[in-house]
Length: 266
Image (tube, rainbow, N blue to C red):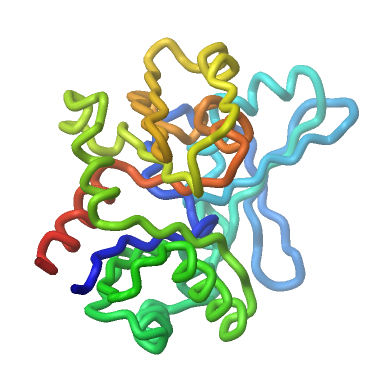
């Protein structure tokens, strides 16, 4: 009998970020860097010069609009819009994590790679490393290693690979401690961990969380309800360090859609 699996690669992209509107940063300029132009803003005085980078798919106003004005009072700060964002020039080059991984491992090649490893009925969900498949092999750890080796050999990079059996995914959904948050799926995030943390530092997470945030660790799943979004959540940024291992996060909408794909396999 073929087993159903969910496969997740990490780190590929930050999915499910909730973006809040902020007041635009003032006094932006553009710089010619030998062809395309970049939009940037620089303010404040003193050292060190603090550079803000935006990589999850938003402009500098959205990424740093709340932080930049505060930090510029204590040091010189610099932020720029990646190409294709704000008033920076448009270029045909990947700029975000999702775009980069899609360029490194296009979905058609991703499916082909998994099929060559003997996996059946492969289905993918958005370009961030999600795949559902069936396999007669029951060793998730062995499958994870084989997939990681195949990606490294064929595409030159080596992401961590997390594989969940159908029962594990189903249990993760049914064990959600915040069912009322399901009505706002972009505020509820599940971080899938490589294994059960041995000495999780939950006290630190409790101390740095926002008043509106709630979290729970259940086995290999870390649940986070973040009504204000995760883009500037200190708790979300600290999860892997406090738990002592790598993980990959998906919002409730993605998890639910992936579960639906697996259910359709029968």
